Image (tube, rainbow, N blue to C red; front, top):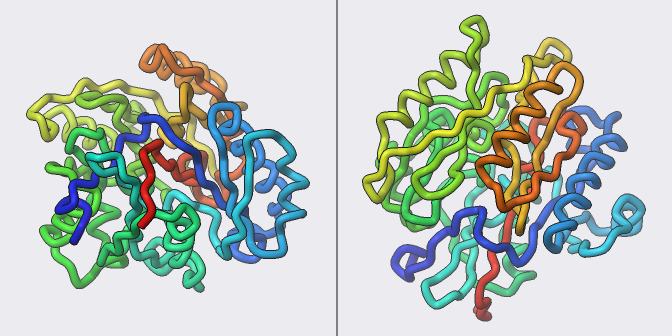
Length: 346
């Protein structure tokens, strides 16, 4: 039986967490291995920021525990020795779901390294089952290649995603749009999917929604926008704005839309860096937000202001968003929330 049949559902990210899971970077699988130390410092900054709000469990490769302890010496942090190659746990970790009676379980999606971009990915495809085994909860194996960064839910039956990613033939070429939609609905238990067209320019994940837009509350969406017609993101974000302005959620509500201006365009080795304030992460009582400094100082301040107005009861905790972005992701990509629930053994 699947989660929907058993009345499990994926909670919204802003519901209370028991803890956050993250994975530690592995030099051998990095795009820029020579940057291993600064990337590790960037991850450590994110771990420590989250630990100000809730416990963090960091996945480390066997034998690396003492090395990682050298970066993470603060409170509220523990470790799990689980083999992995990539450190983007949002995408290869489990999606936790909660039943009506409070039981916690997890969805194990198939993982193929963002459409076969980074071989080998066999260790990463086993991360979610090993996390769920460690936690000691029921596992639902989904017959679908999917990454956690490609979806957001509102906790009331609506899911947000992009066609560019979920319908990309490098994930599930044998499945139709209708079949993919039905699998997603079954395994996170939603009634309606709102399909945006594309993700941001330069995003090697093929358009993950967690760089584009997210729910702030049921019926309310925060979206990053570009107002420069000469920028590739202009058409992308304007089209997504149009789609959201015409859409309704599972309850029939039209969306209230909160706009955050994008940071200035930034390049590295002639490739665009996917800078996004929407790659923030909800923590208990706060938000961990990547900011970019330099030419982005003005939009950094605007992003903090808008999010603080949108979430007046949360503390906005900023971190250096440039520290890990060359590897292809940011704060939200590194994390996976485990909801607080009445956990029951399998």
